[in-house]
Image (tube, rainbow, N blue to C red; front, side, top):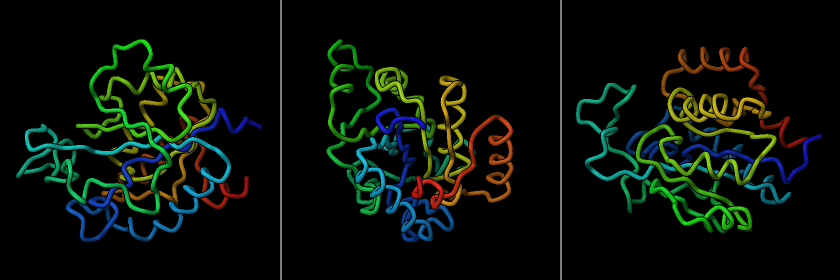
Length: 213
C-alpha cells in the first residue's frame, strides 16, 4: 500500500464556469458530479492527503480565447481573472492553498516552500494544458508523489493534457482516473480517451473505490 503522504489527489479545473449550468463554458453533466467531488475533497482533507488543483486564469488576450472557437484549441471566453466564474466551486474548496502562477520561480527557496507547505497547491494556467505552467514539473519533483488520483473537467481537454503529461513526465507513477468524478465536452472522445489511457496503464476507478480505501 502506498503511504498517504506519497499520495496526491489531482483536481482539474472544478471552477464555476465549467461546473455550473449558468457558467460561461459549462461542461455537460458537471453539476451531477458535484456531490462526488465534495466526497473526494472531504476524504482527502480528513486524511491529510494533499490536493493539487489546477485552475484557468484568463485575461482577454490569451490565445485560447476566441469569438470563433473550434472547441479543440480555442474556446469562448471563460474563467476570466477576478470574476465569479473563475472561482472554484464550494464543494472542492482547498485548504490553505499555495497558489502558483505561470511565472517561472527562480528563487531557490521556492521549492523548499513547496516541500514544507501545510496545505493544498493550486496551479493557475493561461492555457488548457497545466504543464504550460513551468512550475508544475519542479513542484512534482519536490513533492515526489508515488500515486496520483485525478478527477475533474473536462475529460477530453484539461484532464487529457494533465493525464498525458503525467504519463510522459512521471511514467512510473501510479496514476488513477476517477471516471465518475469527471465529465467531458465530447462524450465519444472522452470514452475513447478512457480506453486509451487504460491501455497505457492508467487505473480506471470509481469514487466509491477511492472512498473505500
